[in-house]
Amino acid sequence: MDSARSDGTRSVTSTKIVIAGGFGVGKTTLVGSVSEIMPLRTEALVTNESEGVDDLASVPSKSTTTVAMDFGRITLAPDLVLYLFGTPGQKRFWFMWDDLCVGAIGAIVVVDTDRLDEAFSPLDYFEAKGIPFIVAVNQFEGTHQYTLEEVAGALALSPHVPLIDIDARERESAKRALVRITEYALERLAGDVAVAR
Image 1 (cartoon, rainbow, N blue to C red):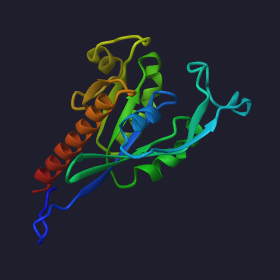
Image 2 (image 1 turned 120 degrees about the vertical axis):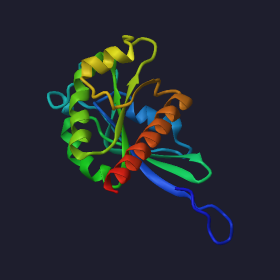
Image 3 (image 1 turned 60 degrees about the horizontal axis):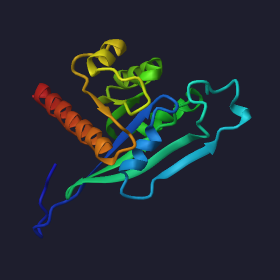
Image 4 (image 1 turned 135 degrees about the horizontal axis):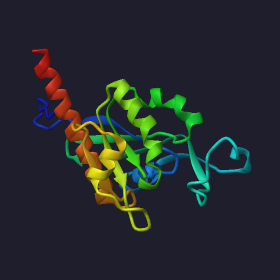
């Protein structure tokens, strides 16, 4: 990953991480809290037109929604830059996930403990695609607090899938999730290389 150029400087490696999950779980918040650039957001107002199309009952105060993607960037080390692509959460926009995942080394599936049922489709998606992913439980004051073991059991996660708790609003917490998915993706890559030998 770290290579020196002929002039003695290090080359910079950039890679892509996808931030996914259900509607209103904190994907846009996570990208915004950690991005070192002004994040690109493709949000639209939630209007009466979405009534009957989008299930807004679980997030009645949500006034905007991502309709294409969120985009941000963070430098984890002098030679490692992550480009962050947040997916739209509503099912009617999931057709975009395939394009957003092209070239990604890994994904963070953000889950809300009040709506764990919305995590199953994103988890199935990344398992089917073979993209390494971690699960980030967005726990902050005002939400039901569960242990990570309880969440893993409720989601029937495989033991090899990393599970962490975060507060998507806090930069260091979000950054910890990005470090973990990068480590996990590299571990998986190293394992695949070892198996291929």
